[in-house]
Length: 50
Image (cartoon, rainbow, N blue to C red; front, side):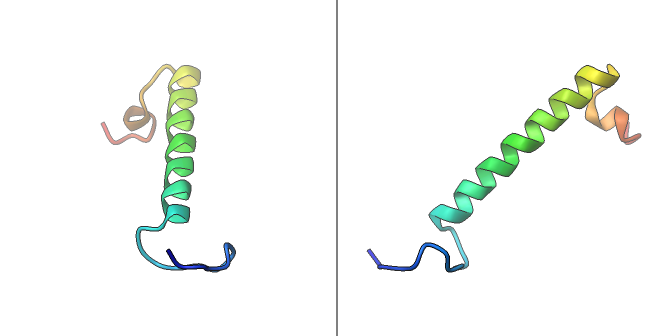
């Protein structure tokens, strides 16, 4: 295991990248759910794609 500073950015499948991916996915899911609850339409209908 490498001893790296936690604030440095490294490319690839790192723990930090996976944490951010998970956080952003949760925000996107909640946003889609709130949009559907407020408008009564799914996200694709709301955006006019369907």
